[in-house]
Length: 270
Ligand code: 13P
Ligand code: ZN
Image 1 (cartoon, rainbow, N blue to C red):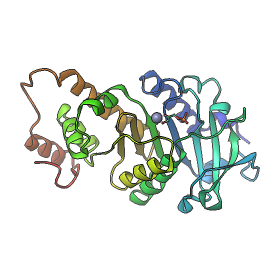
Image 2 (image 1 turned 180 degrees about the vertical axis):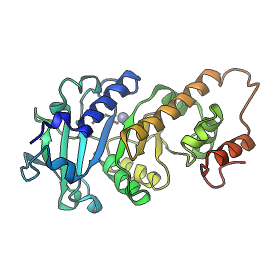
Image 3 (image 1 turned 90 degrees about the vertical axis):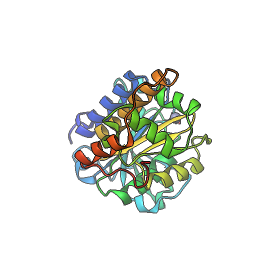
Image 4 (image 1 turned 60 degrees about the vertical axis):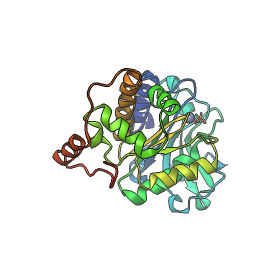
């Protein structure tokens, strides 16, 4: 058996969490990540027949039954993950229609998966239907996106349009737009269901007054989406109170998207 701490998915997960912390997106235990793993690459590192303990998830996701996830623990600090990954991370396999998580590795000191598991797993199910190569769901609390939800309309078309106008690259990094939810109680099945509903059409979903979810085929893709939206939000926060002398027009957005072969969300340009 190879050392699981050297597995590329583990190394990449720890690097991503550390990098998110360094960006200031994950204060204290803020944020969580889940990564869908293939059974093939797991067998080199883990006896998948050995279940350490089982934990109820509190919801069903039948389409993910039997699937494996590397997931962050609840109450864990991204800041510390690189020093104690076997405590802060766990590998689970879903059983019993998704109602049970079988722990195969990690959460060594008795910990458990993130409180946002409903939003993560329901979003995985929604994104897999939209893109069979989807693998990653990431949640965090980036300062400027969060600040923007205090002062900008939460209409998702208006929110996206403002971000597209902040920086030329936005329109081809997230041409499909950003879904936005109003404030809701976090950690619940209800916010999980609402997030997954948005994930049918968006790879990025903002939680008003809380944070953001980014998804993708790789950790880099999910990270890069959030990074781009957060940078655009920073430009908004730095300029919204100043006289605006120049802007990117809808025609320029259209030309940019066409040139980079990005399909802008239908009807979202004026
Ligand atoms: P967890 O520590 O349970 O992952 O929660 C962090 C968080 O960001 C809740 O939304
Ligand atoms: Zn959060």
